[in-house]
Image (cartoon, rainbow, N blue to C red; front, side, top):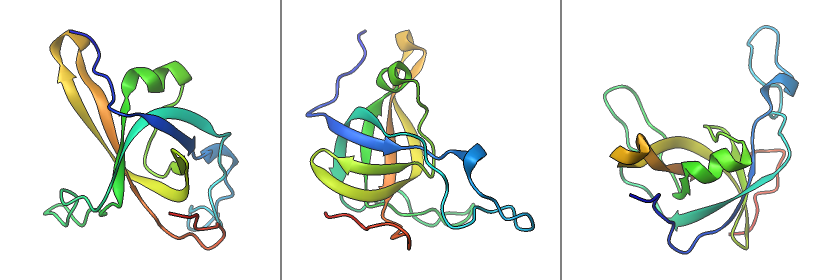
Length: 137
């Protein structure tokens, strides 16, 4: 079986967190102001806007809701040499300037001949950070 294709992919501009270069409070061990970011990377992704109903409070504690998600292929991610994770930021979804953050990752599209998941959803949410421009939606 072939690796699945995305329907109507658009370029997604991503900035990943740069933990080693982020200023951290010595006592609380939390980032001071904002996390440092790596250089921007562009991946092809399939965007879905709208509230996701699967991310709601659960028995294990509250889960963050989302404003939508971007569907990516693992093969595209590995070609560019990045691994997206929670806290990474999308700055552009297609032609739309945004300032949204990944709140969770969900593997999907499991194929036996591919050894597991071939796609993943990166759910995003606008956190309205104080030091950033909110972007235009």
